[in-house]
Length: 513
Image 1 (cartoon, rainbow, N blue to C red):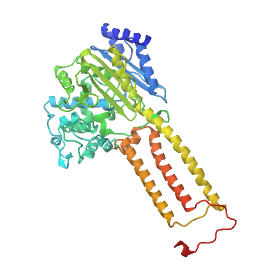
Image 2: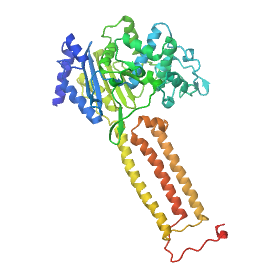
Image 3: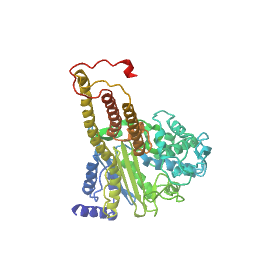
């Protein structure tokens, strides 16, 4: 009750109190405005970060035409003890898509392209098919995730840090069979925005990264850059992911070709300005205002998603149009932005771990700003998966130890004549066949189970995104299955029997036949 009351006081301060220009500068530099109950915010955020076991995070809140709160939490680099601040850079993940979407709309505004154009007008070699026939995919289809490109296309994104990584990523998609007719329904596929990034590159005559940097600087977001253009690496937080019950430092592979969809870097200070741009309350030209307003216009010709949202240009828009949001996830970073335009409120959260709590913090702060109870926190998928994998590994380890200890005794049993070789014949052959079928069914079943659990993604992709324990579990399942089968073969060929006082007589060749 005390916390709830404190938050209500905070909301009243945010929504009703005037904010001086000097206080705005303090908030933007990581200091809190004097009328904001920073302690109340910190209690809420810290509690969520502790539940998430998140190493570090940064939060920004905007109200009206000002940043009213911006602060870092925890550490940007746990090993070096470097704290996270509002100026610490984080990978944004899929919230990067809104920047790419805006760049595309800027080119449309300049008359350089049209959203109804087929993508092949700009990338002639990108051939996509639906039911075996050439498909007409437009830029609008890619922008709104209605292209029909399957979610599992994520697996085709190559690990690549070279200058041609973007083109190589899009080339990996060429020839793909679509899940649906273009424009038929919404289906999120991150690579859609990589294709748009290449279109931006082709139309502008500049590299995608150079074009984005130019646009971002013009918008006053000088700290926001494509990952490959970062020159001061020490400003970027270290990324972590779960392994054996706690976050561990994880150096994710370089997916430079996925930059338009997920690898823009930014900090809370710049995201505060970005949220103000979305609200249209910051100083901006009429052209920019119109362009940003257009970026919030979703495709309503398709059925909304399961959360009753339509998709615009890198933003999920609620069916009533009263909320814009997007979540971002990379293997070792996450982010969440949410805007309530009619109430002129915005919240941004950045974290150096892939966690559902990043979303819960943003959603919870927005509800508290609106004097509502925060939503119940659902279990974070990755720690939960990590715990399940650890329990399963313990069980498999026990089984493996039991099998191994039994197998180790077989040579001794042979020496002491408690086991003897029995040639396979008759019913024993049938037993062997049944064992082979059972082993085949086991390995086939494991493969099928993993395919469903990982949405059809191959193991090398899952290894990048999931907790390390999950991959250990996968290998353990195959290993224990193999050991169990080999143990069966050993006891089948050398069955146990009573100890003999005399050596077994040699078996005649005729008997073997």
